[in-house]
Amino acid sequence: MEILVDSREKNPWSFFPETVTKKKLDCGDYTTSSLLGRYAVERKASSGEIYMNLGRTKNLERFHRELDKLALLESAECVMEFSEADIHSFPENSGIPRFRWPSKYEVAAGKQGGVRIDAWAELRINGRHLTTLISKVNKIIPVVFCGNRRSAENYVFDKFTLLEG
Image 1 (cartoon, helix red, strand yellow):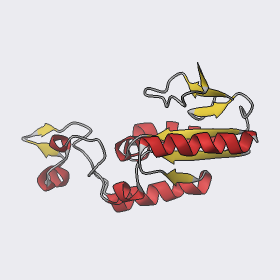
Image 2 (cartoon, rainbow, N blue to C red; image 1 turned 90 degrees about the vertical axis):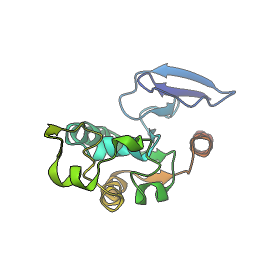
Image 3 (cartoon, rainbow, N blue to C red; image 1 turned 45 degrees about the horizontal axis):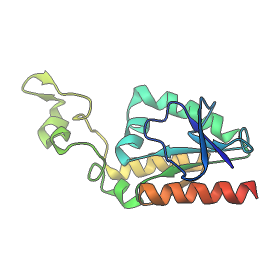
């Protein structure tokens, strides 16, 4: 089995000992040479990454274009390397450094000491709202929470094996 990884993927899964080829994929982050154009996986490493895709206006349009492409395939999944509990407790366990979290004052005022605070500190979204946004993604393509990186890689490998039959 030859596994294809999008060339823009920053920290790809290894799928050892399988052959992995980096290639610019039209949609998704992972597929195989025989499933190309029929099945793809979009991977999200943390709740902070999915927040950047869904909770930030400038990235939302691009992410929805990606989802629209994935929806045209026979099958696609959005595989999360974290648990659903990490969404509910957002920004806890999000990968966003604690010093970047806003205080209640910063959220209310949108400023810190008269100076606009940076984008990470402008978290105007909580776990409940992020859960709602992810449920909208789930209506387009299935979302699978795997709990951690290793489980996510194993899940995708098993799915490739099953689909390649």
